[in-house]
Figure (cartoon, rainbow, N blue to C red):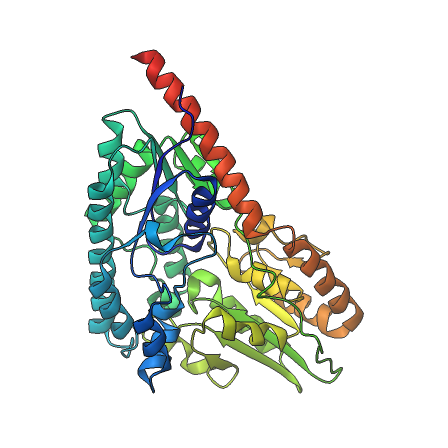
Length: 428
């Protein structure tokens, strides 16, 4: 009988899989963790982070990828580092030019292929593999030959569901179609994602919305397991001296600034709602060439994406978190905002299992400009409700810890590996 599982993990820079690998390492189950570049706090990394200009670029791009606690350096294998560095430079180029956007896509695809190949080469005598979507197929095929367990981590909705959803959204909102960059995958990658789903024994998803997207595409229910993600409540917390002014209201959005996040509906709702003392801050990278935002540019303040340690102050200096997303897995920014004591206005399409409607904030129907505007006005006119919901949100976020995610993930995977091994040995 198998005593302790021996598990290989492959990640393409998704935070939940970093924590899962750390949980496996703590339990003594992790053989190695294959991923792109990771900031391990080495001497040259500390020096680079302090350099003028380059240090700032590094800290705000790949330097943000610090190892999570509990994940030993010795078990982390970095690959495609040169591609990572090129991506960090390319993403700083003007994205309004299609050439640079195409370059980013090409570099991202090349990195995925490199990580997939490295994972296949790293596999030795492991009992199981846990891998991100898009990089799992080669190692899944290899371990399948000797009956090993295959676990696929899927951070977003099923790719076919997402593609159809976003194509319809582009037709609905043509002015913002250029900001939808999450569905136009090359055929080879679509084939790979389909094969990964077929090969997987279990598929980890972050929300019921994602699970339902897989069910709608015919994936067997018994393959799908919801494991809600976590938040670091020691990093994200309410301000010690909260700023409160009855004459001002600060609304915050954090994430990719594009139509997948419902940005056109956010802007229209805020246009109806705006007034003296009311401000809107969008933190993140604008998707597409930026032309869709020109008519709205005087209505909001734009802040380019920030590392988490810098992002914290934007939450602490805001009154409401507005996130009317259309298509999500389980958005970490919603948990970060809640941990920071902000009431949240969002949709059921991913965050619905996090925010309790009327308790931590409000759940509004996707694309409903009237509902967004009405809820903003309700929170503006009732400061006591804002404070009450913000406190509830903080308490709610504390139940979604990364420690709990690690425990749940390790417990599930250990049980699956042992059951899978027993079944495989019986068949022999």
